[in-house]
Length: 194
Image (cartoon, rainbow, N blue to C red; front, side, top):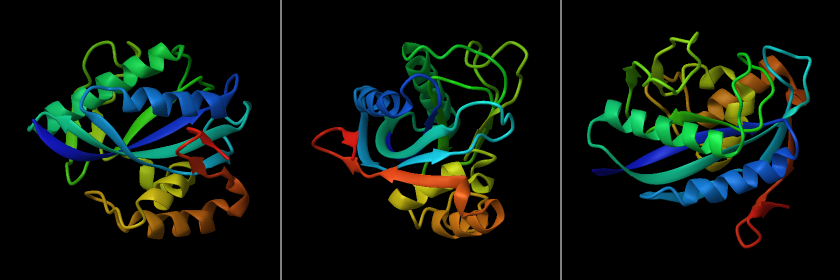
């Protein structure tokens, strides 16, 4: 086992997304061997892909996690834990980019670069996409980059063409300032955004 830096992206747009995300952060902090190091502000963002749905609420979390030495095994560990949490919060498989109660994505895992088959049961049977870390679309999605840049502005994951802050600024020029709206900062004592 080794201690790894880990960045997760969280999103939700059903029921009470802000409460769901706050509760999910609590649950992430209770995963054995994981410790929450930082929580981003909360953002409201326009849906990507399938536009006919409620806006998403998004955040990013930085963790220190005890994981397998092998990067591929570590990525699978994280994926399985994230999928368990999504199920715990009532996520039901719908369609790609559709509405969801909770979505947790691995944005980056330190300096690890992984392309690995997903274990059975971590995606729908019709989706045979590999597990890719860092997340293959993160550097092109403002809803990921805005919260990530708040907690890890200098993060430069393997294969990225800039830091989280540089990528956020470039993507904001493409998507426009209205694509994300900052709603509030994380209050560690209250365990909620204020």
